[in-house]
Image 1 (cartoon, one colour):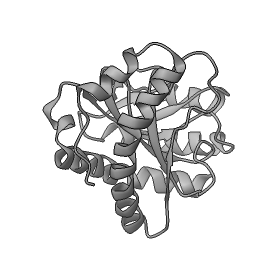
Image 2 (cartoon, helix red, strand yellow):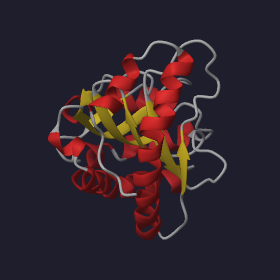
Image 3 (cartoon, one colour):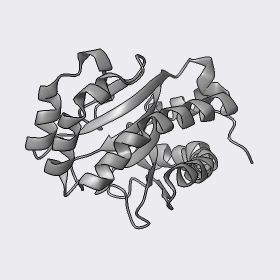
Length: 205
């Protein structure tokens, strides 16, 4: 099977009531697609990074009542997990797809990586104009790269719950999302653009 893109039924998953019912839809509709595109992106990143990386697909195992509002795959250089490491993500909310380089609050070396991000502020600001930033992976809102200020990176460095994710958002009705080959190429381009920042983070941790 090759990745065929994300379609309306994938996004409609997040309108299904009930934890079990929504999880079943995530597992049958979305996770097989994550496996397909994730396998290709693992190969792509391994080749460009020169070291092995591993695919992790969100299981939402801790949830007991509330159904997930989003779901994602993550790619990291650790086989056992990704949350404590700089990692790449692709995922869905009900209204968009996100393609991220993610630094979330579980990072044990947040101060070091935060300082690296502050030192790399001009480089981050020079990323493509359609890039966006999130300061909370639980919140589906993002800010335009042009709105990013050094204080946001300072908060990531100094506040325990601070996070920093950078990449692209594509609306659910964007035709590029529905075309597997086009979307995969956008994901590869996004990740390739962010590899220098990712490698700096690995050195800083």
